Length: 177
Image (tube, rainbow, N blue to C red; front, side, top):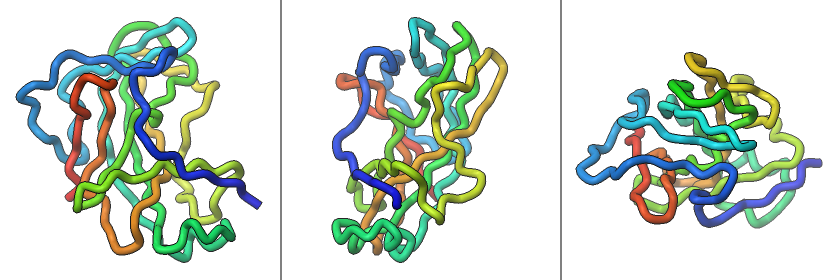
């Protein structure tokens, strides 16, 4: 049996994995498949790498996909799997960068999706959905795609993928078409 929690709030600005970037004033909204306009610094274990982030796709499930969790708090919701490619473009090699920690999603109506933490796994996890791990080393020139599940209302669609740049900057946003 999988244990789960839905986490609310946003990550960002936390020590050991903080993402930093220059000002985004005047930044235009991107669409899935376009890389971040600026390199994003991601740190772990006293190493900092520079990454270009490119949300690739969103795969939305069905409300029935959550039934195996046998928890009524998921009634009226469905899971959306968000895929993001991280290309290491400079800085230190980073072991286990938590790429998905600062990724989020919003519905078409602007409601924030809730990250779904699953201890174990959902049987409906797409086969190509690779989650963050603490062992993979990202080196300059390499690109890795990571994926994470989010909860949204069953009747909603994901409208945007977001990347939190900390507490004082607007998140980067990519429109889902």
